Image (cartoon, rainbow, N blue to C red):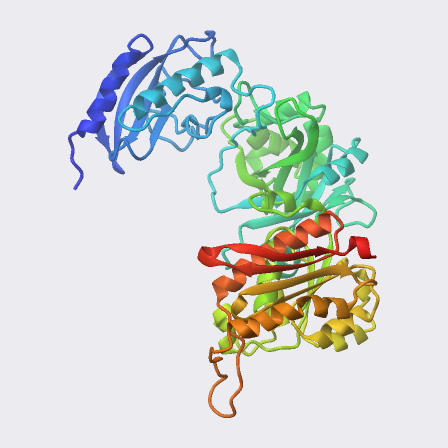
Length: 612
């Protein structure tokens, strides 16, 4: 049960505000609100420039979690005597759906610009520190310096009411260069693929192509740019949908930092960007009069940092209203016939010139490969290589998934084995894959692991794969063999390939791993085997008195013993070694060993560059 009296910590936190008496006034003491929060109403002084946007004093609703000094502290501007517009580092107002006496637009005081940093202390002074940061936020907002030169670029917060619906695109520096080639085109059609009805992805819409010209939709030669999505989008999505794109010169917003609320405001922004709505946009809308809702995407160039070099196109989407057609009520036409001219006039009267018709913004995100793996990606030079995995047993499954989740798009798999129940102790596949070919199941898993993955699985032996007429093994930049089978490696290197051939194998109990990296036309297996022979003998000596697990009843057959955590530990180290050697053009033999408490050390490192 919640105590309806503020705790001593809350009371002490309020007393700390007395230190800010010149700049902060409490206008209403603590009151308990729903969801375990306390409300404190305060008035804060603007120590910056006064303007119509920010008065000398503004009122704020401060919500504080009941478990203070832990939990959240949030500052919302009051609707009366508050700040009625939106600034950077602030969420949108959502005016039309909120009946609160404050705007649902808290200011960002936890993730903030470096210029807003205030020394944070633990304990009951948290409210004091947050209030100091709020005062600094108000000052910088008043002075117009919330976004200083060199800060990371911040997009205007476009308010959305449908939180499930997303429009997804894939833009980077390369696609930005492509857009610059077609600078004279400002409006066109786009195509999207949307999720299958009845699935959790039915509201995800993936933009695939942009077209130029009023008759260019899906026409050969009319593409401006296309996104190379992976198999997950192209194979598992359905329902092509038609939309409209408009390229603007800059991000659409209303001063100081607010998303347009209605079509009148947006059309004015179009005009400021040299786009005439009736002349340039309406002809494309006339092709969307089908009693369905469609998407409009507004594109604008952005930089990574404020006032930095423009390097990328960003798209913000909104949902178009259902446009007029023969079934639209007569009173909207007022003397015009129900033809194209009449439809245009009806839409201007009932939609585009009415301030009461709000814009329906849709959440829009850039799902480019670099953006999706920014939390843990490989070097760009490695991500663009084409890989072939020969064998996706325990080691191969971990290595291949690590590479794909880190940004590798092209990774094919060759393996003729079927997954068995005993494999699950150290394999990335699941019980639902038992009895299925590992190569096909791994391909499906990787397809769901990275939205841009385009690889294929081949459920066959390497001998059969090399005999396939449509396969050219020389197309692969890197071949990684994980079978530990000398015959397989012999067969691969006999082809004298131009790309890298990497052999990765485990010692007993995954204590050691052997990683050999060489150009395919230089691999000398005899040297490789000689270099690891002494370590293989050490493996046998280290575990000479250990009984191997057996493969069920009947004729005794040993199983290779290795735990999943031990295997994963060595595999992650192998990825780092492989990445480094590819980047630095090194050919090498590396032997690593698992130590105590999850450590890995290099036992031997030999580079072959001086021998070739």
